[in-house]
Image (cartoon, rainbow, N blue to C red; front, top):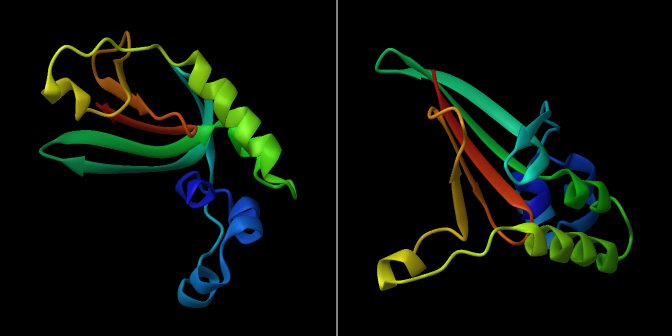
Length: 129
C-alpha cells in the first residue's frame, strides 16, 4: 500500500482495508523529506553498516502524492499520481531485459546515490558512504 511504503500513517489508517487493519499492527514512524531527481519525496529511512560502508535505504513517495493521501476521495490521489507519472522521463526500450527493469532508475550526480521511481509516486533510494 502506497501510504505504508511512504510511512504516511494518517493515509494508511484512512485507506487501509479492514482485513489488513485486523491483521497488521502499525505504529507511526519517523519520516524524512529529501530531494530526488524526480522531485521532493517523503518517507522512511534506515542507515546501516555493511562491509565498512554506511548504506542508507529510503522508501518514500512523491511529496505531492503524499499530501493527497489524507483526503476522503480517491480522485485527488489519482490526479497527483498522473501528474507525477507524466513528469517521469520516458525510457526507450530496446531489449526484453530492459522491459523487466523498474520504470525509471537514475544515478545522481553523486555516484554513490541511486534512485528508482514508479508511476504511482513511489520512490526508492540507496546511498553508499
